[in-house]
Image (cartoon, rainbow, N blue to C red; front, side, top):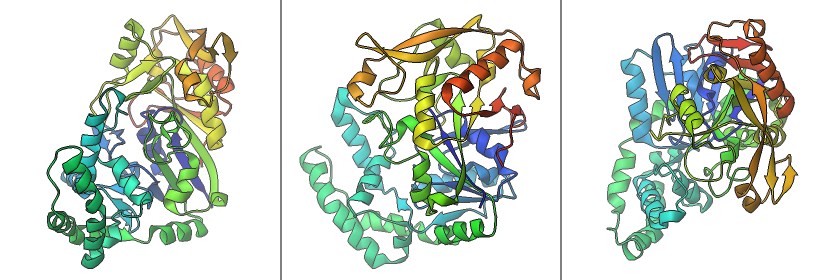
Length: 427
């Protein structure tokens, strides 16, 4: 049962798309198990760049079956827009499978997300405004709309009525907005049904049967560990579980079927949106990382906040995910620095702390304790083996591996599909 989980070990944007795509030629299924179109993956194939938001990265590999699992929330308009864009570029998307139990992002979920975030003002979370959180809230409140509901108009209408009964009260009386018409929402959702139908499947059954047949299944997280609703920097998190446990619930496979858990680490650290970030840089180094690394959100278009590598976060990701391997990305971005600081611990109230504090208050006040590692100036983008890297780059990788608590099995040395050093095979 070769089932692998691939997830972000920081705040997301670590380069999961490239890692998933590189593994795509060796796997039979690639599964998105949580999140929605608030995540973005950039995949470079030859001279072509693809920006994926909702679709699994494996959709670019013809031999692979891409799957949107039950734990994902789906905006049909975004899905079709993304499928149309790929089809126009000659990508075959006919193998895509979508769980009938995945929840639909409705127009009123998007409206609620936007007005709520504006209402919070300075206390805003920094959401993408795409309706992700309200859709998960509906799911938990048992008034959510699932893909399968599009094929029973009576049930669909009842669920929309139940959800809008409260939301329209909130929109009109609290936010001074117009009420949303039930009939209009039902009509829009039903308009997606016929086009969605060829993709809809019992993906839990499909994936478990595939594993029983010794197929290779790769589970792909949409965001990073520190954005997990339970284990991230709450409340500045997403509304689902991108950590390894989320793969089991979000795809419907048991934990005993997971054979390997791979964490994606950027050679420095970035995050988008609000929330604490101990190693964040506000100087020329931060600007350089942002410029050289092309640090702009694929989905949001927002500049990413940039900082040095944080080993405390990496150790935490190893622990909560049970990581077996790391894939280190964007090592090439660090070329040119004489010395590269690495955060090895925090100072909190005058005390050295080497593990992530569970208290939000402590984490907010954490100050990074750095060790400087020697940098390198040589171009590493043509490196094919670990031995091809400059000695200082090798030492940097080995230091990060020792600090993070799991072996680094692959290294990204450039944005291209082939610009990767594989040290140990993932499969």
